[in-house]
Length: 264
Image (cartoon, rainbow, N blue to C red; front, top):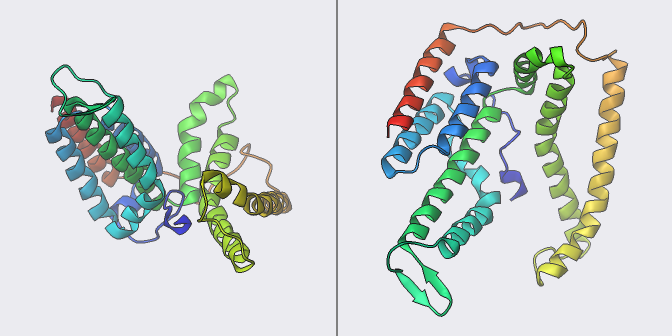
């Protein structure tokens, strides 16, 4: 299941979405996430599904690879669905009542929309990292944060930290999977027992994982220092970010999409 997490991974392929400017993709992703909290009707969610389906088609990332990222958060989606079903009160008669459990139609509708919203949110955030390399993501975040340098915000350092964090998500997950297999080969059991026993079984996993993470961080710091890395001041770039006509078409589609969401 750890290998199913797609956030932070980059899927290298030639597509229109991959060729877009990372600054536009970051802004478009933020607007997309905001639009998910604006829509609350079936027809509006249909428009969102058509939009995100078209983006996936243009990105040439296999749909199975994207949906694979939903497996680790499947229980979270189910939990959010049940919470909204059982804790949402309605104005009309309940559709189900047994003891203290009362389910209203409003609760079922809200739970349904919340589950779809979480699924679309995870797919949208995964697409950003799947179609944008870590270097492009760093440059895009730094460019967008550069206006805040006037108030003392370290834009380059923040962008570098965010990108390194995203980059090392799959690396740490792979390391966790290796440690789990090594512990299971020595007789460790991570799946049986109650919740407390499972939590105790994770202790032998967390200690070597923390040691490995600190070792990787130290090696990365030494490698950056050996290459004379001194932050963003005076740095030049091999590839300077420039908007293209492809980004202009993307802007038109994004404005049209937001207009449709607001109207619906």
